Length: 199
Length: 247
Image (cartoon, helix red, strand yellow):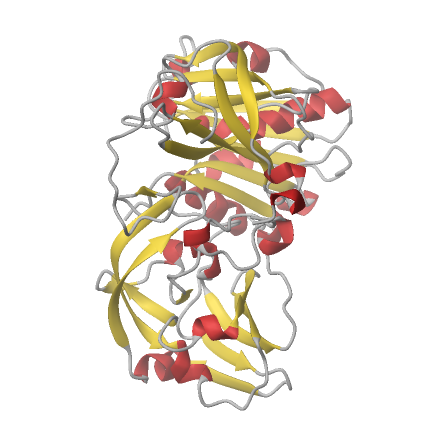
């Protein structure tokens, strides 16, 4: 136990088993990003998957949204300590976009409009664990929350769920993305509180 | 986990309150003694952890309000309604009381005295805190980098660091935007920051300024959008936001 701050009691203990350590429940939906919100028109939007050999697969907006989609409800966890339960999304599973490819890559770099990047193990995006989502709460995803489409990987801290996603680059070597380069954890498991490098 | 492998930045250190100053009726600057502090850059933040007698812990991030000064650091904490941590830190928390702090955190929303580009700081409300660290670092370094600060707040009573900002500093140009109530004697209609404000008070886009915007989400969105529309390079615009989205 850490040093006790006299008089500090904290809130009533929720004991909510869905809340990872160090997280509190958010009722609203905070917005966090490193720069201006890119406004990406769906007319010119394109999503690509590039393999480690440079083979490129591309989807236009109409092509992506014509793919079979899933509606699902998940909890999300931000490294800044808020968690939001039962968020409702709609999108295309990453399996659909990557599953059929011939690749030996173990890692993925997600790229965003606006230049943001984040790295993940490929295995964390497969088997129904990740989506390219374009609806939140039954409505089109707003630009502030990453619209027209973002990556959603709910089992990792939310900076891994790249907003304004424009592509996934498959890689044989792991390299740090934007926040990972400035000290955030390479993997980011909220249940193990992997906030910063070394956690 | 191998704690021996953990860098100093990640170690929780015991900090004690050395002094405090009330900035407004709901915001307090806390000065901590923090032995072993490794130093930090203006714009970085720390994690603060409070532990209750029964072992319950709560942890929050706060921006550093001033450059490093040996083993002393300053945070300015805004009390938020029903804020589990902020209500304690701006209320019962007393001189000598311990908390745990780790950091510094964040290597993006930072200003270094060696950076030569002009700087634009745009603060909304308590978003002034990390920007004030930059203003203070700029003054402490005595460099000639030109700074402009645009500080938007609702009423004069909500002004942080009032006395210090009133003192003119060479190379720092401050513009205030009051959205609800003007100070006495100021003959303008309260209004929100807009294109005209930024066109007048910010650097022209071609100066290649680095822009730091900190405030509530809607404020940051508005200011960043206007700066982009005025021709500022999006890659030179750095943002830090708090609070819920508008929708």
